[in-house]
Image (tube, rainbow, N blue to C red; front, side, top):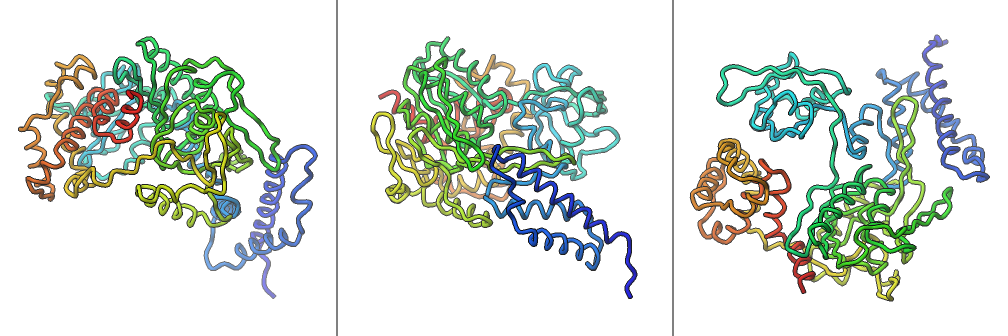
Length: 536
């Protein structure tokens, strides 16, 4: 007779806790009066779960930690629901949520890893590092007692060393050109703001431009201030760039759309089995309710970005330019668990004012095929000849002015712009993929920091810096040193694009995105399409 070990009762306790957690989770997301989901489920399913977990703990060949089994079980349950419900382990909770909070605790630097060396690109104005005297170009050699230069320390490990709780201290030793030995600094970590607005500027005397990279807790406030500043510069037309914006908070997308819509106009509505229909309307106090508006989207514009684009399109407030958006129309609520982990559970679907569900089709439990289908669609969407096949003619909706729009997945633009496959020849693509232009620009900027002090600001740089033939030749030599040969004819064909990227990357090292986007926009096909549309 086999001896019964006390540890075999642990999985039973664990399973009971797990089932209780599932019960509480269902109870939390259920509408009043909807009943208890578990009480309607055959108890045999849960008996089976308890039995399996018990057998694993009792008879499995190796010892398995309880946390690992719990995490795997919860992940498997959520994967059977839809592609966007997910489990967030406690170890990843801060990393996942900090980007949307609008701030985090750290030392306040932007850095690059170059040849196993951490090089400070810039210090956040007013942040802890600037206050103690760290400067752009400094090489961080040691963090506390750990030598990080030349030791192949992973970037995420370095980030973990530098970040930490507010008011805690971290010691860094840096090498600075022109100084003998290392300079030692003790930095007191503080609150560091993160911004969802990359850049805003006047393209010309009438047209303003704003780019949002996500919808965080501060996005609507950032946009409001940008619009106020641009209107102060006599802006009458606007390009709102949501390309690459994967979304964020639903509430912030509503606030952003409200800046452009009139009182009472519907922005979005949501509904779910345990969520009543909720409609959100504009309250009419936005700063840009009048004036021509273009919204740029692409295949990576998702969720909150699609809410804004859909509201603008369905209310006939502006023109959508670009490529079909991602197609995420499921609403998640984050529910934190006692151990510090959380689940993001899909609780509703959102619909644009015309009634469209933007969610792309999916099969529960098959997220891999869901994302593979996205990649196939993206490849197809980039071909102009395939444009007419992208819309689902069986799902027709009507805007407030009676124009036709289509459902079936994503927001389809009013003006379609296929990805320009011929914009970069083979040589340019090699240079971009290998990071040659980016790396050379950083090295050049790092070697000539004093020379760029002659530029008063980003605008001065954009207007007066030119990539001279000698500098272009140095880039070509750098490419050869790094194993990329190119024919002179290829360089001549791609010279405008290469020079533009080189100038933009150099400018970003000194003036951030204020010097990057105004340069790169000169060869940005979608941006130029929007500019021409507004000019006409």
